[in-house]
Amino acid sequence: MSMQAYELRDDDRRPPINDVLEVVQRGLRLQPKRLPSWLFYDERGSQLFEDICDQPEYYLTRAEIDLLNVHAGDIAEVLGEDVRLIEYGSGSAIKTRMLLEQLRSPVSYMPVEISPEPLRQSVQSFSELFPELTIQPFCADFTRPLRLPVPPRAPRRNVIYFPGSTIGNFEARDAIDLLRKMRNEMGEGGGVLIGVDLKKDPTVIEAAYNDKAGVTAEFTLNMLVRLNREIGSDFDLSAFRHRAHYNPMAGRIETHIVSARSQEVRVGRMRVAFGDGEAMQVEYSCKYSLSDFATLAAHAGLKVQHVWLDPQQLFSVQFLVRA
Image (cartoon, rainbow, N blue to C red; front, side, top):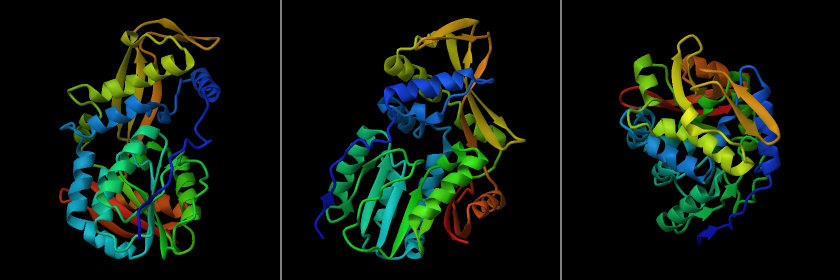
């Protein structure tokens, strides 16, 4: 099979500037204030997230890579041959390379990523690493319905790959909705291969989101840099700070941008007051026990067929099929 990399295009689901402004204004009217985490991922934000993954406190990426080093062959056996691999939020797709190296005669690889530049870099890299693999990149928001391109030949199974711990960024209701969407898009006989971060010592979890080098703090505040650039707001970065705290009752990291003083910010024609110490919620990072996640998947009409753990049992990769 000759390599066939489809031309990249910005999907029409990428929100236009007016929509971003509306989303931000709506979130700032809430009490407490809240902005969606997808606003992190402009080009700079995507790069900063890659840098976060290299920080010594950020165990998640290392644990997942350790897991794949041990289990990628077994995962490939479970997925079987002639798979079409559809990856949500592919980014630089480092972990995907480890999986693709083990898959037998994959039909195609379809990375879905909202940030165009990381997607282009991923396609270029994979075209060189796997010159006979059909690559069908798709620049889109994976949380919305996708018009999947026609594969070069009929796959035996569609597998939606959702590595990392991104499912944890969704509250339970939204996570169930996303899993239902995956269930529909994978079709009959398909599956979901998903990374799930596990509950563990809260000090380990909290340190991962408060690295000493301050990369996560820069990543969080880059959201305000993006808004200033794209919608003309006037957030003063020196007047805000990053805060990430583990809530053991909810089983999640709660990330906020905190106002360091009383101030007013212009967002379009709207003036937004922030009190001294007022926190604006920007991300959740939920952690699960194995039984927690199995229950969540069941609400979406899925069941856990296989679970793989890293050697330290910090992280899991799970394969879900229709219940």
